[in-house]
Amino acid sequence: MKTRIQAIPAVIALVCATGMTSVVAAEAGAATLPKGVVAVVNNMPIAQSDVDAIVNASGQADTPALRDAVKRDLIVRQLVEQAADKANYGSRPEVQGIVSRARANAAADLYLRDALGAQRVTDAQVKARYDYIVANAAQFEYRAEVVAVADPAKANAAAAELKQGAAFDTVAKKYNTTANGGVAEWSELKTPLAEGRTGGLPMPLAQAMTSLKPGAVSGPIQVGNAYAFVKLDEKRPVVVPSFDKAKGVLRQQLEQQARQSAMTALVDKLAAQATIQQ
Image 1 (cartoon, rainbow, N blue to C red):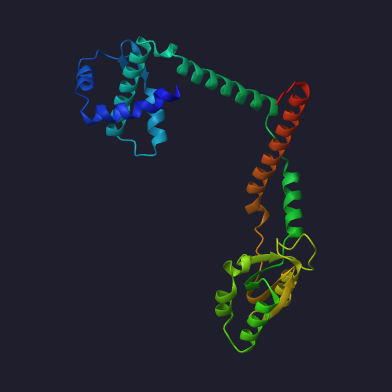
Image 2 (image 1 turned 120 degrees about the horizontal axis):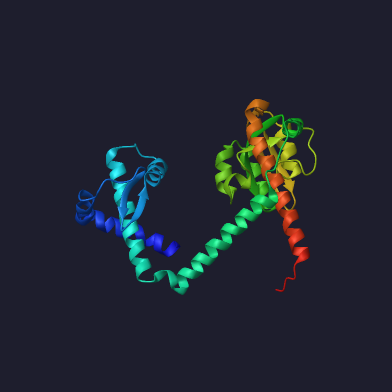
């Protein structure tokens, strides 16, 4: 099916480019059509509902011209499909393979829908998730410039230049090998700091950021085998959205998590019942 459908737009474009004379002429001689039918091609009806669906999905203004174009496209599609069926293309192995895969995919999708069911998330679960996020949210976010160097000699050189009054961004451009020393422009940090809860920052950098006042510089700070200098540019409170604004997104996240958990349990069950050779 996929191969044929992909070829149809090219055929339609070719017919439209030639003015579709034969299709228009055939429409002109058509008899009165049954209710809900916009055209009949060799006794095969084209439903008004098919035209409606394509027009609605197009996102374009619903006009007589658009409806005529959609109807003619459907007529061309029907003509080509009938020609393909008459030439027995439906029995070709490549078509049968596509049909088989489409059938298997549809069956698997329906099975998962029924086996997993709707994942219900209660209002209490949504509120509990919101309360947890608020309780663990950072109080402030920090915008800092960072210079990172790989050895003590460069650290001493950078420190000397800063002490002599060199602009921090000038030193950063000279010594950094990655943008802002590999640190994000803004970092959310909850104090007191705790290992594993520093937004991915090494603890020494997080400690420097949270202890500095805007405009102040700290360093050199040893981070593993490297050294860093930190200049705090800005500090501002983290704005936590209200529950009413956040609950829709939180519900979607919890439903997705519940579905993933159900999916994992189902796959584990099926795998335990199966014999799998790899």
